[in-house]
Amino acid sequence: MLTEVLTAAAAAGGGALVQAAGTDAWNGVRDAVARLLGRDEVRREQAERERLDRTRAVLEAAEEGEAERVRAAQAAAWQSRFEALLEELPDAGRQRVVAELERLAALAGDARPAETAHNDFRGARFDHSQVQGSGTMTVTNNYAE
Image (cartoon, rainbow, N blue to C red; front, side):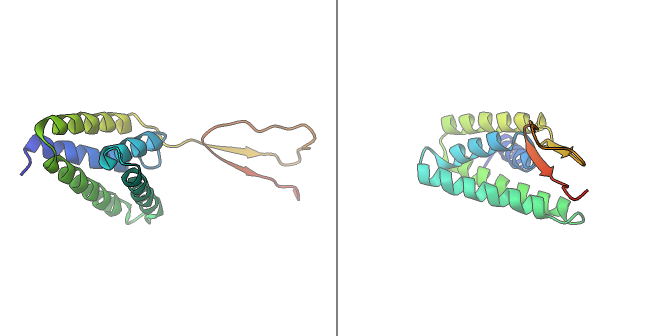
């Protein structure tokens, strides 16, 4: 059985993971969690990345009225995964995982929503135009207008 400190760290990790989905911190959190749970095994890390991508997809697809319930369920599921990992490790390994979960919580806490850019070129000529940006970008060409 885990101590309250370890359970709290696992809960913080699950919450951080859910909080990071849809933010600029997602890729960093995703990779760190995959490494943590994959334990330096390439196949396991890839499987964890796929599981993390499914989690993000579920969170993004949640209907507005269901979003909070879905977020809580996903956070609890990841908390359970982190608890299982902590239970398997010796004390030295536990401390390393706790430190990493705390780092992930801080990273997610500092995250901003993923940025989007909108460019509207109504009536523009595209002889010598450029679009520059970062993050998620949608470009709509309204040639008929």
